[in-house]
Amino acid sequence: MLLDEAIAGLQPRPGGRYLDGTFGGGGHTRALLAASAPDGIVLALDADPAAIERGCAMRQEPGIGDRLIVARTNFADLATVARDRGVVPLDGILLDLGLSSFQLDAPERGFAFRFEGPLDMRFDPERGSPARELVNTLPERELADLIWRFGEEPASRRIARAIVREREARPIETTGELAEIVSRAVGGRRGRDTHPATRTFQALRIATNQELEALEAALAGALDVLAPGGRLAVIAFHSLEDRLVKRFIERERAACICPPGLPVCTCGHTPRLQKVTRRAIRPGAAEMAANPRARSAVLRVAERLPDERTDTPNGVPL
Image 1 (cartoon, rainbow, N blue to C red):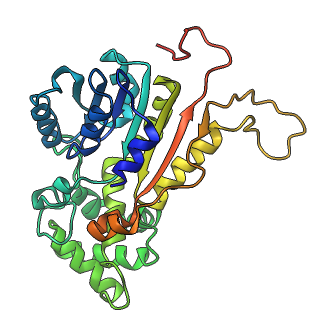
Image 2 (image 1 turned 180 degrees about the vertical axis):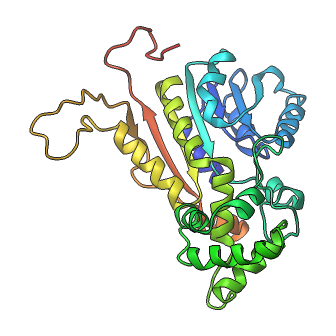
């Protein structure tokens, strides 16, 4: 999604060093490798072991080989991994915050309610606790707050009440069970463009994977390892992510971040980013028609400014 726009925003060049924070199906990584040929390097990260297998297979293709470095990790750790792999400073970082079709189409992963599967939702199925732990153990009020905060679901209290009532009889174990409970709680799909469980599933997935905390860490890390002139492109899929990205860029392009009302600036903040895209970029009609999942995608691109004072020639702390 937004592949051409993201690559155009990053402006990859031969010999450049780039990072793809979510390898997924490998589409963005492949495009970065092609645009930076013949000697550009791409470090591709993913927490999903299946994605890492696909990345290792891509390394075997002609013209790729050592130009692709694959690491199994959450993009929250991108700065540490980039330093460890010796690819700093980076000329571009791409963060695609959406789920891959491989994850959505695998019933056993528990991301989609259109399939019957276990309530898991973990990006890395070998780490952390599955979503069913939240569904079956959180107190009603905390569950409602979670669904409201991460899903922006107006009926969060009604949904939480229904979940707690159902789990008193027996644990809720599958995607189908949860989707049906939510649907009944809000009165079905009448008048809705999307399934009534969409926001609840989003909220549980975000909480299960601590996605917003990971995004904050990734954005901060990106600033540390981007070269001056290096670009950061982020594709978000819901307002919580996009709002966080937008505020981060606005903060890092500001000369002052003092609280309003102070007569004199005391923060000493130095701008470190400038906007490349004045407004968020959205998919065109053709892409949305070909791929309905793209309808909520939003791309923002920013460029790293040189540091005013630095201890290294390229402005990146190594």
